[in-house]
Image (cartoon, rainbow, N blue to C red; front, top):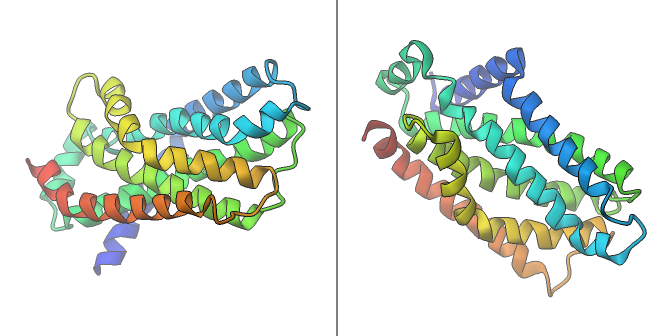
Length: 226
């Protein structure tokens, strides 16, 4: 089995497992929709404040609801010592990491794909004017969440308070990526193109993904075995 076959085998296994039970997916989606609904009662849809806070609101929702999915990445392997079997298998640690990161990315992307239309309906906002660029920015920010979340999920999987520890570890590290995503999403939801003033945020987001994906691929073997 080639390296990429191993990666996609792990990703497919995780996706099938989650889509059968929908345990984390339902919890994450319910949380995200409830937060959007609650804020819709507070924010005036016609106010300028909504345009200024749209990116912040969306990525706050995605960050908090996404952790519910990220917590399950390695935790679902704990029953019957499945995680020990995966670590002892001939699959490289980086293949295991990328497989789980891709599965987490896909599950968080499902939440985002549902929440964007819900956001548009609840806040009476047209958000599709810059849709292709918005999708690209969301994909970059979601990969940042999936990468860090998968890495720290491996680090905290054997801790009793992993549901508490993972958010405490991941949120401070995610600040540059979330700030970039918020700035760019606010601009794109308002229908504006990314200009020279905001292109720095796109560069930060791309650099963040490259740096932390590389570090995670190198260090994951130590984290899993150590």
